[in-house]
Length: 404
Image (cartoon, rainbow, N blue to C red; front, top):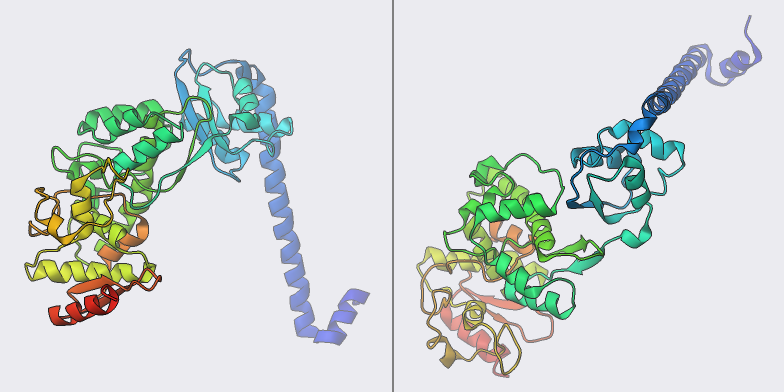
């Protein structure tokens, strides 16, 4: 005999469908109960673990008083924060810490930011520190297309960190010192080495092995916004974050281009070309086109004749307070004797001239295929360029757009 619900389903949908609906509803109920039981079981296990190990909340992991900058991204759940604290060596037991902050209602109150912690703090003290909004870090923005000295000056002027220290570290050629810098200033968990393009002795930043022996970190200092500790931030902490960001953001793009069969130059040469594109392009859509021009000229053995490389070689201009002399006159090109001067030297410069962003880096890896060898700024306020295949066309563009 059918119950009223079965009778109604049969009248509305027919006996076969009605039976299916009943089975579906029953299955959904079982799934809901299973999920609920699992959640309850884990929560109960956490609280049981807390009851059994509560004394451990008063015991630090070590007696080390070394300050560790611990970062929490916005929206990170308590479980992940606990696991990251354990990986950083700041607590022994991630489940115990998670259970504690959940039992006290603090799980939803943990703040985002950068916190200065020590291994000689107890889990209770660490939990308290992560509730302190005043401990959140300060934001530092590094702009795309800036050279390292320019960044150092801005950091000094804004009073964020020592510009002199930043410049010294960024110009360092000692990979071992940089590795020590990483262990001193960062707790971020590193991904597996990018062996396909960057194998080397430096296990954290293997791509640095591709630098020429005397090269600085120019180009590798990824431009982005970073969070630094609010209390006594250092230049080393910023550089570590920049190199980590390069590993996380740029290296995968390069490896994908290799996988896609783009057959790119080695990573360092891509970085050099990307830094040129970054300085030359204003309109985003011009980047792959300009990259294509660079490759076309290199393939024909032509001089690149890039103004930005001359500006880089000229360095700081005392009179105007500029790192990039503007304008640079044609007669000045021949007088700047430097391997970076692409009006005098064939091929690419010996190193990057600035820190490129992802778009310029990707443009070099995926350049536009065309027959252009020349370009000139449109001078119409758009920031765009006008491209030409022949020198005569280029001269006409120069006459039209620059000699108005």
